Length: 181
Ligand code: HQG
Image 1 (cartoon, rainbow, N blue to C red):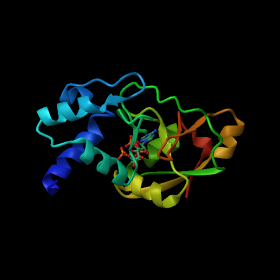
Image 2 (image 1 turned 120 degrees about the horizontal axis):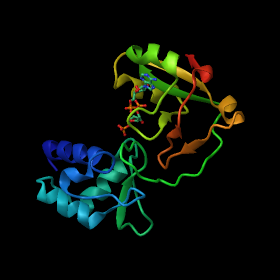
Image 3 (image 1 turned 60 degrees about the horizontal axis):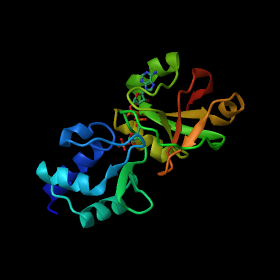
Image 4 (image 1 turned 90 degrees about the vertical axis):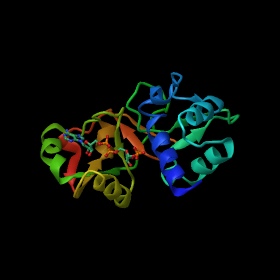
């Protein structure tokens, strides 16, 4: 693929499996899966070059490991980050005692008042390390790192899920469990 083709494909794969499948005329099933043959067909119809081989390569090399195949490799889905309704069927897991969230300076005041909310996605996204949190926060502006007392949240009944690509997910983080790092 040329650089330009790769950029087009990356954009499509960021958008379609999580936010706008209808953009290329497909629908996700209730667990977020897309038939690979359908995805390839519809991508090509929309002038995005895609084949089985290209898809395998993109999934394997995606730095965030955003996508996962099903067991027999006939379907693909995003592992987290959806804004449309899907049931990923992750089971609750006990998180590490401390988790991190990167955000922007701009959002801080509201977060300290209202806690971390999931906004357009299905969960608040948290990481086990500061470096990841900083990278996530940087997407929104000057990054601020928040330290989350996940142990106390667990003790108080809040549930956490670990996505296939190792992102910790939870419904919300109330302010009492948040500290600016
Ligand atoms: C902020 C990317 C004001 C929150 C990344 C964040 C991640 C509030 C923004 C994944 C707030 C939402 C998720 C409140 C939260 N008031 N702002 N009460 N509560 N916020 O993009 O965590 O590239 O939906 O801090 O790498 O930045 O999509 O969430 O800044 O893994 O694969 O509202 O998305 O992965 O922004 O990123 P986002 P996020 P992908």
